[in-house]
Length: 291
Image: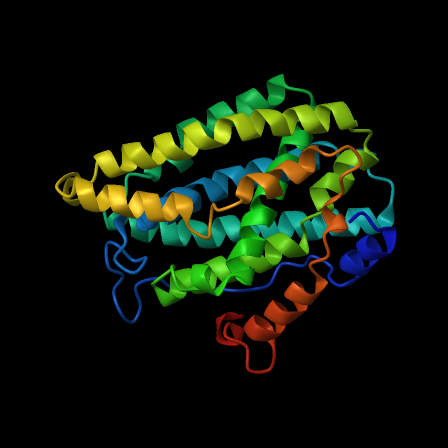
């Protein structure tokens, strides 16, 4: 599927630029504890993802800023600036959702705590800038794969439940697809090699299942209502992990391991154009969220 013209078409279709946007959660209708259509497991899954986004995306920003002085191509500099601006906005809006989720009883505050952030920054300084950036490029492939699924599968759209949470996830997914190749191109531009890129992704793939399953299990174990309904939790967990979010995702993630892979080998132009219209067209769903 590798095609240079496809890459140029995809890249030309969008220039990452942060939208001035604001979400409100629990207004005018209060959010229910299990906001994802009453599904305990999926609600905890979204809460865990949302909690990890602000610190994760701030790490992504730092990885690009570390090498910014080595970027010589003016277009890539502008794309990198758009990338960091979008990621900063994602972190701000997810923190607003996370505050609401903490108030509802989700045990996620520690993920974005000052102590965890400080340790992450210390670890980043212990590894080469190229490895930090390789991890960002690999993580961006993860978020792109999930984002495309969110935007492309109506059955996933139906799962989010709370309308404003769905709005947030759709906006976030759109912008993840918009800047899907930026960190990768920065990594390449500053001399990042294939071996480090692939090995880094192998490490992330190995950690995916234990981190996801372990974090979700721990969160549910702290939920008094969920503990009283183990059969329901087991049924909902089976639906989550065998359903449209995860079904076949390993193959899509593993594309990154192919030598010569580039994020723009897979054309998302039509998907982007569709969702840009749906969210921010003349009658777009989120036009009233723009400031």
